[in-house]
Length: 358
Image 1 (cartoon, rainbow, N blue to C red):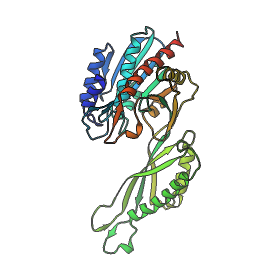
Image 2 (image 1 turned 30 degrees about the vertical axis):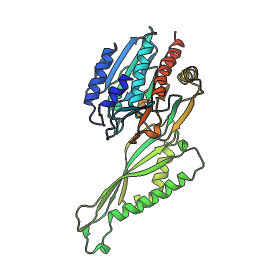
Image 3 (image 1 turned 180 degrees about the horizontal axis):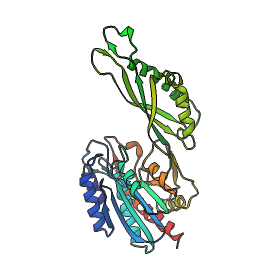
Image 4 (image 1 turned 90 degrees about the vertical axis):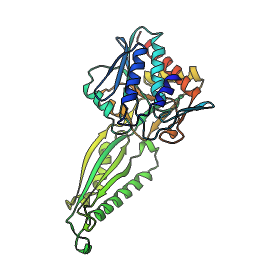
């Protein structure tokens, strides 16, 4: 538990990961890994050579708001205890334990920055990566006895409303860009409500949310511009349909040329087949270590794995101890028993996976 406690003691909100990056690099070097730190602070460490080559990726950053680490009974409290320093620490410890009993193949640990904001770390890594991997495991809370096998994708749009400005003393003579934006939002809300009414598992249903809005210039001027950001989550194989529905909902506004929409960013949905050998290795390991059947999760959010699969079409899974409902809360904590068992499960799953190759 020492590694996890030390990680929790270092406050590392997105954009301020320098200290924890140095610590992780030093610790992995001490454990015998070949370590390098890139320009943005990602730590990459490897052991072994040959195939298979497995990437174990976790993020070192957290949201803002330090929670003093403490042990109370059978749990550890601290910012990142769930999201996602415990999963990262479990990957490191599980990989190290695995390396002590394995002599073939290669393990690479990647601790990335800025997952909670813009995924700068994984994007930087992918832009410069020329390695080949056979499998990838991403450290996020799935519960030690579960696996996350799906994330929805994401479309990030900017909508701009542009009108003619005028004096606020005679607003009836001018079109208010903020009011126009309100009408646009009303249309988006109707689309959102229609999606919410679909009788499907939430993972298979699109969603949208207006997350930012800004308009106006002066306190005495009818606003001539208003910009908003909408975050759209997209199930697998629905990207084009979802974009088409958004454009259709806004068609009457777009025709006026007072409203425009542009795509700022997107990431692919992630969904892995339950019968993959990577999944099977974890299913068997969970059954052997914990004596329970593995639970599969399909989540509505997205993560660094969504960025990864744009470049690498290989089996991936998201795994880590912790209850994701505690992520980003003031009560963030991890079960000590669950954390320790997750380390053994990772080690055991890697053993089973490598045995299929040798």
